[in-house]
Structures are given as C-alpha cells and as structure tokens.
Length: 277
Image (cartoon, rainbow, N blue to C red; front, side, top):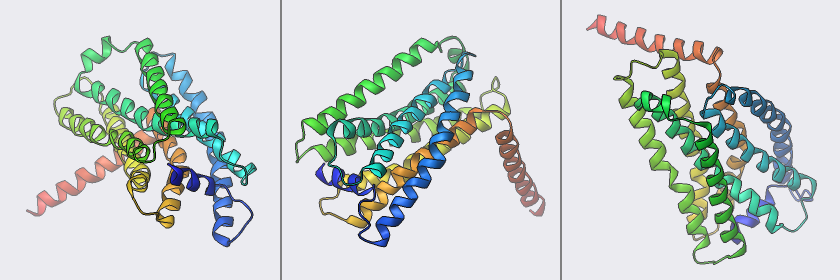
C-alpha cells in the first residue's frame, strides 16, 4: 500500500528533477485539459437519456463521475506536487477506482440482459433499482477504500485491493460470451442496437484489460519495479479518456454507420472467400 501511495505521489510533477518527470507533468496537464470538459459534456448529454427510462446511462454517468473524482485528484497533484499525500483525498481516489471497475460490470450485465432476456428486461428495468445498485457500489467502494487507507495491514492490503480489481475480469468475459451466444436467438433487438451492445461490451473488456491489469500486477509484485509502477499509473491516468468511448456507444448516429461498415466489410470478405472455394 505504501508503494501504491508513493507511486501515486510521483504522478504529479514536483521540482523537475529530470526530463521524465517534466514529461509526466505535461502529459497530466494535457489529459486534464482534454478529458475534464469532455466528461462534463458527456454527463450532461447522458442525463437527458435517463429521462427516457433508459437504465444503462445511469451506470455510465456514475462511471464518468468516478472519472471526475480522479481528475480532481490529478489536478491536486499538479497544483501541489510537493505536498504530503492526504489520506482523505487518497480514500476518495482509491474508492473511485474500485467503483469504476464495478460500474463496468453493471454496464456489461445490463447490456447482456437486454440481449439474453429482452422481455424480462423490458418489464423489470426500473430506474429506482439502478439507483440503488449505484449507491451500493459507492458504499462498498468507500468501505474498501477506508479499510485499505485507515486500517492498513502491510501483509494483506495490496492483496485485498488487487483481488477487488481482478474480480470483474471473469464477469466481463462471461457477459460478453453470453451476449454473443444469445445474439443468434434474439429477434426483438434491432440490428443496429445489437452492434452497439456488442461494441460496448468489447470496449469495456478492452479498457479493463489494457488499463487495469497492469495495476493489479503492480499491487501483487513483491519487488519494487519503478518502471512498471510508473507505466501502470500512467494507464490509470489515461483510463478516464477511454471511458468516453462508452458515451459514443450510448448515442445513435455515426457509431452505427461505423459498425455497419465494419460488418459489411466482414461479410464481403466472407463472400469472396466462399466464391473462391
């Protein structure tokens, strides 16, 4: 856990001791300047979809709110790079990371139910249940963060945190596989919606695999590897930008044309291979 905090503090740029830290500082500022306004716009746009009794935007909104918390922590790093890490701030930062991965699970589960159980989903998707689920995710994440930050046990804290980060992986794979399996039997979901759903599930799994698995490896390593630590936390800084892709899959429009063109290209290639045989 102390290793986690020490590397976190390095994410800000203190006095420029070398060129690498200067680059970290510049990259952090660029990510904040690009990501913060885009996330605020995405939250506002998704809020309009919630009024239409859509459930998925609620989970995506909470995911983006966790990104906002991380941006606030990054701004604090940039503004006060030399300050001692505040336990309260680190509590909210760590809790927001845990909440993010479990809101990814909620998004994947909701999309899976839309394909696998369309009739059940149509009549059993009240917004109140989704709000309760979101509240529970935040409570569990804060409880875990409080345990790790204030009840720090050197022998177990990193393992506990890594376990909570790793647990969503089999669930994300399961929901993606179940969705792909149910696609052939589903006739009530339009083709363009199917494409967006599968695309969203794939993006969620890619975001988790590429940006969160490195931090799990960092937490489980017994020996300090500063290069791996810096790389894993750099990925965490980039992850809020990756979450914005999920907003694109919530909106109809250009993404439908892109997915349709990809599917058409795949069908054309299959037709050509069949004709040559």
